[in-house]
Image (cartoon, rainbow, N blue to C red):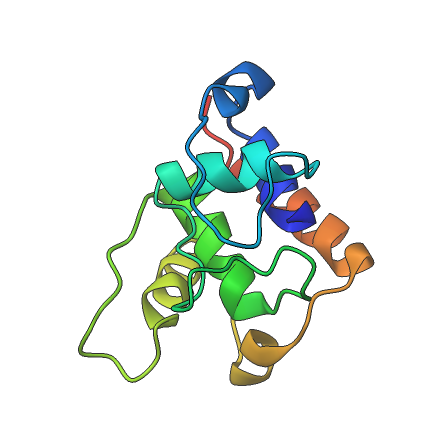
Length: 129
């Protein structure tokens, strides 16, 4: 949830985010601080959640998951390739085409808050006005 909020605010205004009132996930309550961010991201197809209808807002986020949020928010929404063995390959390619070097080890690595700050700093040139 934290990562989603930070990436969204790099492109969208708080007012835009707060406009979405649809509840998408069974584990996101209307009273949670992150509700508007998660629901907005889902409404823009930035995130999809898990097959069981959850978002798991308090779970750690790995780089593969983060890459989907980054690409769909700051570069362009990607349609996941159903042929590929890995759901995240399309996001890896999009980041690579924009100058990022992504290793296999990075994709499964859970991101720390410090690494999140570094990613945000590196993405400053991707933010479209």
